[in-house]
Length: 317
Image 1 (spheres, rainbow, N blue to C red):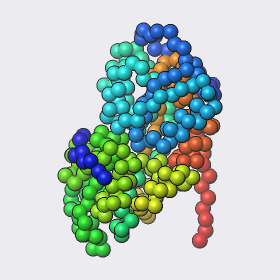
Image 2 (image 1 turned 180 degrees about the vertical axis):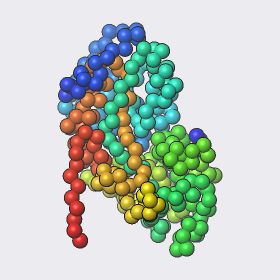
Image 3 (image 1 turned 135 degrees about the vertical axis):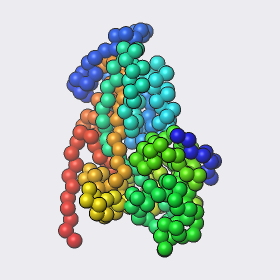
Image 4 (image 1 turned 30 degrees about the vertical axis):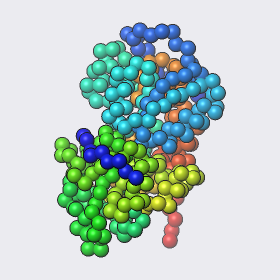
């Protein structure tokens, strides 16, 4: 699944979930514990803001812990997870496929999954673009290349060409939209990849016809200066889907409440794939991420915690 590349200007939980050891693997003696030592983890670049906050907070609490992280597009992440023996956990938007599970089974490794959050895939446009609402049918048509310009999409649309911009080749964002809207078909010729989510925001802010695809955690933390600077440069689109009776529903943006209510159509889970097989530092961090402190960080960043309920208040107008 390639897109054209363009250069664009704590631990009860641990004991419960990870008590099974991977006895078949041969290792040097381990020196790390759930709260100390040094490990390497992988994380999808789509979730860098959330994961970095989790790591920074964990290391502030447990000062003898050092977590090294590589932020990668999803395809590369799974290649390294399967082939790099030093990797303990990976944070991603998809589960292992059958071939990957069989490979681990041959190595007598039992992967363990933990869901840590749900987030939305956000669509962003240039501030000068008056079109900020899309139905899922219109989005599918854009991804199928049926519309060349915004004018083709709407009578009030701008004449600029539609350019679909992803964070990276092989990213979780690209894979999610392809599976949801294209199946076996390829992205159209007007689809491009940058080298990061931040680069998507920057390109969309300078390109009137662009529509960017990013993880919502890049724009959901209202207390973060980077987030507020991004929101000053772009507009977030509202998306509408049809219900089971074929009725077109209201338009929703990827806010926390609309993700919780499943009103926003582009939702996915964020999970930790743990192949550590023992109560080491990887398991300790995973337990932190689904524990009270880690879930509070998810909530504060405007995403939906996996294990902590949120209050949704209805305001009467």
